[in-house]
Length: 269
Ligand SMILES: NC(=O)C1=CN([C@@H]2O[C@H](COP(=O)(O)OP(=O)(O)OC[C@H]3O[C@@H](n4cnc5c(N)ncnc54)[C@H](O)[C@@H]3O)[C@@H](O)[C@H]2O)C=CC1
Ligand SMILES: O=C1O[C@H](COP(=O)(O)O)[C@@H](O)[C@H](O)[C@H]1O
Image 1 (cartoon, rainbow, N blue to C red):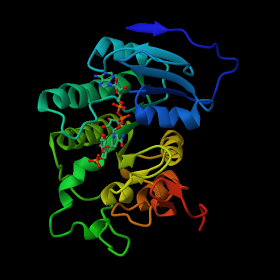
Image 2 (image 1 turned 60 degrees about the vertical axis):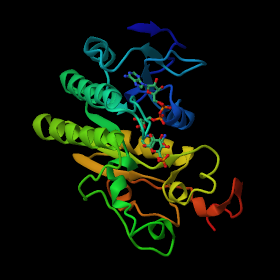
Image 3 (image 1 turned 30 degrees about the vertical axis):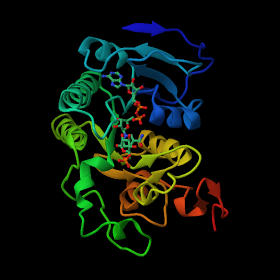
């Protein structure tokens, strides 16, 4: 494990948060909105490329000793590190997503961490998108809705690994009383929703809403939860009810406000 010094803290902030996979897209979105709000410890196997808040631990999440060390003094973990590719092969998701996630949960319990927010995925339930239901279910007039109580129906081995991560979270909550929220993230893109991609527009998560959602995961009280992580898109087949009720998630963005890459309506239109 390599520890890279960062700017000294001038005051102690409310909570210490370990962010795994900090160098990636979701980590960038979270830090873009919340860098000043917490005492951050960032972890990634890739070293940082620019200025980062807090301290940065260069480590692999499958390295139990390094993860245990990184967990010391931490209140909340946001666990993003893993192979994010829907087409990722089994050996990679087995190592990075399943073994790595088990290592993170185990170390969190050992260190007395209060809460873990786990980055799950739409691909854990991707096979609800059957030929009969699509593409209609991606459109605003269709009322087909998944709410997080349904069983996983993964659309690939990556989705299987995310369902496994959710189940690991269930186990560590039931057995050790760890608070766990699994966020089934939709499609995170910066600036505007995916273009010419109905499915991606229906499950768009803006950077701003992403940061706010994980802020709520840090702040809210919960036992074990599965919520969907998307913006408040007119077209949607994932319910936001649980995220709103349990986390007080209040998304600001909506893919319907965009025409291609242009915002065409006011945020509250
Ligand atoms: N970007 C999206 O739209 C979505 C992302 N997710 C999940 O969110 C998480 C983050 O995704 P992105 O930021 O998009 O991916 P990314 O590839 O941009 O970031 C992942 C980060 O994790 C690190 N990492 C991977 N394996 C690691 C390991 N074994 N040890 C330490 N670090 C490791 C990588 O170096 C990378 O910086 C992933 O778990 C992904 O499955 C889920 C649904 C949608
Ligand atoms: O879980 C993930 O989902 C998003 C959206 O899936 P896609 O099949 O519409 O691309 C994906 O972009 C991301 O890489 C992945 O981690």
